Every structure is written in structure tokens, then in C-alpha cells.
Length: 222
Image (cartoon, rainbow, N blue to C red; front, side):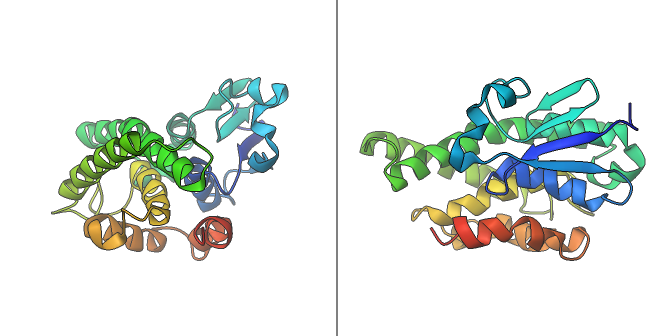
């Protein structure tokens, strides 16, 4: 199984794609992963061909032999268990820490990803204006951020003080998107901002910057 070709379907503007892509680059010499771009701007994620891999059309997705996976957390777990020696430093070994990593990956979708994307749609005018819903989403996000801030009061990362796990990177990608929302600025979440600043040093030189080139050039300015 591990010798079969592995394909990662991604788009650099997609936060979850960046999280998984970063880890595959970290071990690109040891594990050959072919990246396949899915153009979100052209709606390629909605094609019948791609939905045969990811039924909801979400990125990233992975093909490895007969294995078909979607959802970033599941893909990372698969890669980590397929290559435990390589991924050991990014996947906590202690049961409570590993469970926390899984919990935060799942929790972040409901409490960060969905409200952030809905607020961005309001900002860009791609969703009908709804001030009451906008306020409710901002309140939900504010509560989620405060919860994460509290977790980082006495530690550098969510599950391992010595370095990041996948949940740290996935949450960081979502927090970066908050910069485009006027109600949420870095000084309102100092602990998360500190964690994000520390992340690049835990990956091979230049890889964090490479993964975020599209984000910095296309997404961040808007």
C-alpha cells in the first residue's frame, strides 16, 4: 500500500489544504506525494469527477491506491499512521493529548470555520445582508477565540509544549482568516498570535512561506 502513488488534491487558497500540504512538504524526500490542483475559482470542486473522491466537494482530498479520503484531520491521521516515525513529533503519543488534538480539529469546524466563512461571505457581498445573524456569528466566534486563548495561557501549543500538532496548524490557518474581518484583529487574541508566529520555526526552512504565498498575495490583501 505505502509504495502506491499518493495524490493530494488541494488549492493554496483553502485553509485546510494548506495545513495538510505543509506536512506533506515536511517529508517530501521520504514520502512522495503528488499534488493536484483543484481550481476553486472555476468550480472544479463541484465536478462529478472530484465528487467521486470528496462527495461534498470539500478540500483537501487524498487518493492512495484504493484509499479515498477527505477531511483534513482524517488525511493527516492516515499519513501519520502510515509513517509513524516521520510524523511522531506532530502527533501526540500521550492519550489525553492525542484526544485533545482530535477534539480541536473537529471542534474548529463548527466553531471557527463555519462562522468565519459566513462572515466573510457577508463582507464580500456573496450572501444577503443579515445584521442579526452577523452579530450572532461574531458573538460565537468571540467565545470560541476566548476559549482557545485560555488554553494557551500557560503553554505554547495546544497539545505539546515542545512543538505543534496538526490541530495547532489547522486552527492557525483559520485564525489567519480573521485578519480580513474588521471585528477581529491580532491584538484581540495575543496568545493565538504568539503561537502562529512560532509555527514556521517548527518546519523545514521556507516551507511555511511557500505554502502561504497564495494566501499572502491573493487572500490577505482583501
